[in-house]
Length: 400
Image (cartoon, rainbow, N blue to C red; front, side, top):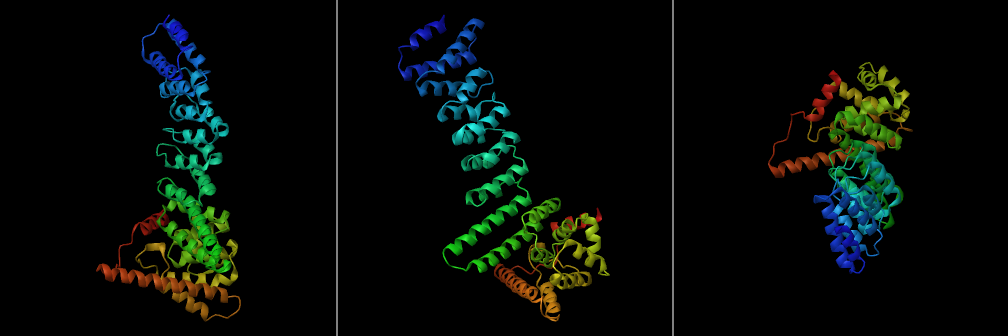
């Protein structure tokens, strides 16, 4: 009876009055002790109101029903396909929408619908994957910032590939604790590309010089990233570097000269298609024959072999003394020793290697001077011990 009177009254009411009455009807359906007949009539009335010409009415219906588990599913589904201001309320809040519904709406609902879905609490991985693949930039950023969303590593990586050149995405992704090292490296590479394009476009540097500077900066950041990442993530980082064409002899040599043995071993193991433990055994073979065979199997250039051989020889003789920065920066003594060894070798194909080692030596000297000056300014005595997490994890890995 009450619903019948409502339907008769609503025909002549204004849009604002209909919206207010619709909200009251929806709340009565959810929270009042209605008889089964009145409940069925109320649901029928709400279905009818889906065709109301005023968006105020449909928006009021969405606001009243969106958060409830007891709302009529047919009404919720219809509202989810309404215009964006109305659909967004339901898409962001309704617990009645299944993952399959949300995935379909990501594909068909437009940017506003994607943004609403990305903000849903406890968003599931399947929906997050759909957003990462085809979602707009706005929706993907909202997804990354949604702390309760379940985002698989491959979805995070896909977002980094699509939007990593945008600073706001790099900042949001790097703020998350679940971003793997390989994705962080993708962001480093994206930033490097952006900086290179910027300086070249303004004619500040020639293209080839900008590319070299940016490449070396990216390699330096990659070695630092590998040093601070958990040991179990380094293998995935190496695979990413190889697949993206960044696993070069220069990067691997930088890792060795920085004392980053985990990255060095994982890189050679991946290139030679050997288990990391087997590659480590060949690397640490003091006779040298094992490493030579591993180096050739890895397909690294023969012209760079003298530098690797000299670095390993120095490591076997002296080891790596713990320094400030751990395995994140070039070791000056090691670089200079390798450079001296290579400069005394025959000229020819080794000249590009000597040039690279000279740049490494300059970088190591500048870094050491900067750290020394920081210590003087801060009144801190130079650190000479305390091996740190990287070395502890490395020892555990060797024992295992």
